[in-house]
Image (cartoon, rainbow, N blue to C red; front, side):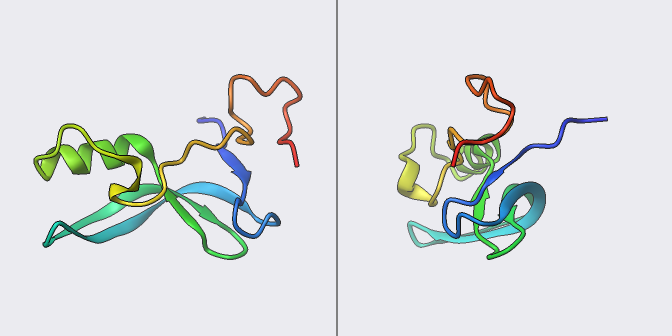
Length: 95
């Protein structure tokens, strides 16, 4: 069984973002990009989404981009409060 990856939502500060699969649809430099079943962290309270970094890198590679900025597609999930973060010794996220 895989470990549960979740962190407190950076938008509402109440919900927890859990890894799930959602459709990815964005207009990028005049090109409509659609990818079904894209891994993303979704808040169970407000619906906030952060796409998984490896999935974004793969989509950009398919779009022909090899070097990208974090803001090209939106949020890149780098949250130090994630439960699975290696530097989190307490086992629970900091508030």
